[in-house]
Length: 318
Ligand code: NAD
Ligand code: UDP
Image (cartoon, rainbow, N blue to C red):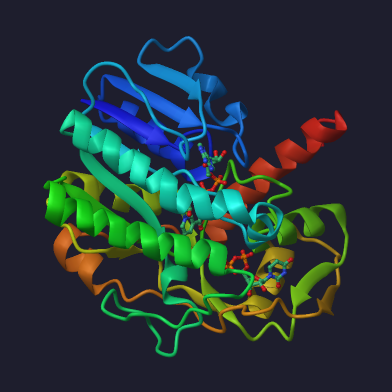
């Protein structure tokens, strides 16, 4: 099996590459422009003849030689901080990038998977969120560049399925964390863990009553692999039901790190979704998916990783 993974030098994309290799796939082309990713995430694969890295912006025309069996379109910045820093590239990779990746799949007769997001539900008015919920998105707010691009990407994916007969899949990830996230990514897991490890104040945005359900990457990638191996074409939520308020989460990070950091409240982010928890009925019944990693176990492994990164940055072996 030969795959193209866009965004394959990012957090989830690089873990997907590892999983495909473990499953015996023969050849993987990683397309990534490194806007938020790093070749550090795939450095362990340097010299592995099965993997080819091409630095390329997939919002521009994609050319890959040779046969391709599966295109995984994972390229896109995913942190709200990056939506502010790179609003136009975020819009472009969700729209033009998805169009190009679908075009590649069509040209190669390959299967296709879109990495979509719980953000298509916006600030949801129901909880948990099933795939049948249409969402509550502000089309002109600060998160719109991501949310609307992903909604467009889903519509484009379904149109290629219906009009061009491309064999497509759509996975909607809920908050996923783990090793290979960027320390300065701006998402809550790296922020809190870094702050806790450095003894800095933990910055809770707003009163911290907003909720998230944090999933460990191994479980998420298992869901991706199950979906890739299925022939299901409607969107599927992947994540965990371990819902927490952000304030509770800050306390859990303090407990896992043994940090003396204090919690401070800073102004809330605009349009910050107040609740987020997946309805996993579809993933369970159709894919036999189940998450296995507790937040404490996943956080412990993630903290170890960030300790290593911080040590490498300071050169202390911290
Ligand atoms: P990430 O930032 O670590 O990885 C994204 C990768 O895409 C990076 O390597 C980046 O350089 C690359 N990229 C971005 N734009 C590109 C372009 N135009 N051309 C080529 N490469 C480009 O983020 P992640 O958390 O690994 O997210 C991966 C995918 O999963 C994204 O599509 C994201 O929307 C989706 N997702 C992630 C989460 C999560 O919690 N991690 C949740 C929902 C959806
Ligand atoms: N958050 C926070 N402090 C931070 C970073 C994020 O309180 O330093 C909150 C943010 O307001 C949101 C939640 O944590 O409610 C998750 O934010 P993240 O950026 O990880 O992603 P989101 O789920 O909003 O896409």
